[in-house]
Length: 250
Ligand SMILES: [Zn+2]
Ligand SMILES: [Zn+2]
Image 1 (cartoon, rainbow, N blue to C red):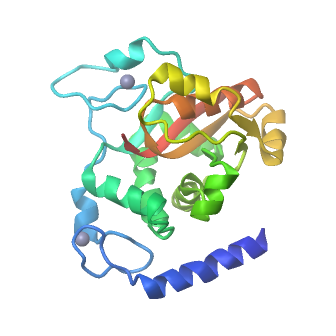
Image 2: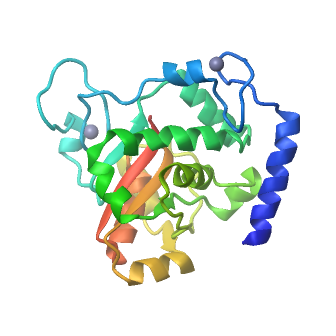
Image 3: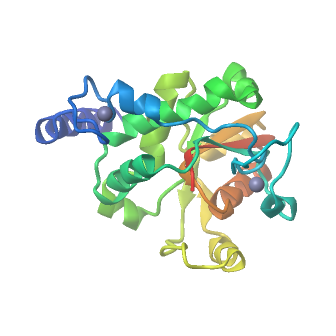
């Protein structure tokens, strides 16, 4: 564990030399481990009401009170709700792509802090914050992790943990590598995900105590097929409530 952390520190140091802090949007210099300058960060809008209380899809126009979008009305998720911190935005999407496919691990720090807006702005997350529910990253299959060197959800959760004070718990493993699911129907996605996840040793110890809750963390919330399956496993294993926090709504 400690050695892994050391290696991370060393690797981040190398990346600082290769990629000096430059704003992802405007190219201005950036202090610290940020990937956006202050102005560009302020340009990124948080999720705005009204939005679906299940999936965080924003709605045009005026709607009074809590509501579910037509898509979620017919669906049953194992999590209480998913709360993307920000709506879909090209700058954010670019950063997430750079993190995942450009293997730019240092971008996770900025994305994790942005995800922290969900906790700052949504009172439904107060319980998780006050009770110290752990942040559980959606796992990556070993093979993909080897290719990328890291799990982006875990790196985002780590930074989110620093921003919120919540602990990180790598409770889940991915047993089955599913190739890109983006072109598949929801039914096909769900079928592929059956049995794709398992509890890690850390997860078994956590769930065995019947904890009150966990916060699943991912980069983007799209259909909820993956997070739903992870939540189902956690719930079945003894976790009483699962909520989902992501950086962005896909
Ligand atoms: Zn900028
Ligand atoms: Zn919805």
